[in-house]
Structure formats: structure tokens, C-alpha cells
Amino acid sequence: MAVGQQFSYMSIAKEEIRTVIIVQARMGSTRLPGKILKKVMDRPILEYQIERLKKVRNAADVVIATTVNKNDELVVDLCNQLGCSFIKGSEEDVLSRYLEAAIEYDAKFIVRINADCPLIDPNVVERVIKHYHSNILKYDYVSNILKPSYPVGFHTEMFSLSTLKQAHKNAFDPIEREHVTPYIYRNPHMFKIGSVELDVNLSHYRWTVDYSNDFDLVKKIIEGIYPVKADFDMYDILDYLEAHPELNDINSGIIKEQIIV
Image 1: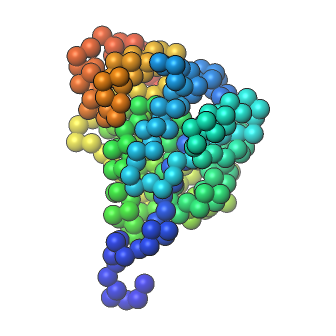
Image 2 (image 1 turned 60 degrees about the horizontal axis):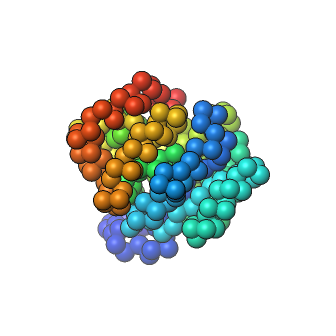
């Protein structure tokens, strides 16, 4: 950019800011095997998540990044059934799986989300994407996880393809290969880090599916809200739980720290 030239986000061609949501998904969970295909109202929870993520207006595609493990052919079958983009990659090296998915689907920017978040709010994802693109010269990585305020299960991270390539080239710690982004936020001297936060801290809510109790809660929420309002948001869930406070006890005993190492 020439000296004195004013940056205009609107002037950038759409292909130059192509943003792709990549969801890492596999059947081999150690705590709750097969959790992403567990059914609520006769539909796998991953199907609910895909449906919700496809409503994100400022993302070009949703890609399920599964593995070459034969057990994950069930995930591939679901993607084919739903007409959802997918890729099969390394089971252990999730960082390389993300890079392969980003290149295959021509992503200039990547939104990372885990497959155990069936309640994720498209508005939350859109806010992270908008914050990144509105500060496109300021940040290499933006998320709502480094300063906890969002419910667990709504975690969203975004970074550029060039940032992902740097992490893939330089990350050697197994944690950095398995969890994709620790290399980035562990090195703030190399990467410019941004954060999206709520005014009220809701991080004590746990709306992910990691254990059987988590699934029980998510099942109750979907069964209670989805038939009335399929495109429910975070505040609809809060209202529902306020009306049914006993549901909060279902998984209240689970304490699992976000990996920020």
C-alpha cells in the first residue's frame, strides 16, 4: 500500500477476504465416543451445528475437517447427506488438517470451531468475523476465548491463511499440533492478537458436549427451544434456562479449563 493511501475494507475484492468456517470433527472422543453423531429429536447434533453455521452471513463456506480413520466415514456420510463441504486429514495432527482444508477450499481467512458445539450462535460467529475484518490491518488472530466471557460452546477463533501457514511451519509441541491455535497466541511477539468480549461474563455457562451430562443438557435445550424457534440465539437459551433453572444443575459439576497454555 502506497504511503498516504487510505485503507478501505469495502474496496477489497470478496475473493481476497474469502472466509471459511472449518469445524474439526471426529468420532474418536475419549470422554464421549461418537458424541458428534448422538441424536436429539432423531437428528445428529453435528447436523444442528452445520445448520446453524450455514446461517453465518459473512462466511463463504462451512467445511467439516474430519479424519482418514474409517470410523469417521460416518461423518463423511452425514456431510454428503447434507451437501456440506468436507475434507479428510490426519487424526492426530489437526493443524495440518486445518491447513489442508483451508487450501482445498481456497480460504483466505479461517474461522475455527469445534464440532461439539451444536448450540453455537451464528450472531457470535459473525461478530468475531466482523471484528477481524474491521481491523484487518491490525490483527493476525481474533477470538472470544482468551478473555473468557462467552459460554463454553460458543468459542470462535479467526486467523489468516498466512498465519496458519506460519503456525504449521513452526509449531512442534504436540499440543500446538493437536489444538491448532496455541502456537499463535503463545507468541504475541510474532502475531497481533485481538479479543472479542461480552459486557457481562457468561463463561460459567457450559453449552458444549464433552461428557454425557453435557449432552443431557444440550438435549433438553434443543428439545425445549428448537420446535418453537429453530433459529434461536444465545439470549433465547439464557431466557429458557432462566425459566427452567433446574437444568443448570445437569452439568454444573463439570470443570474443564479452556486450553490456554
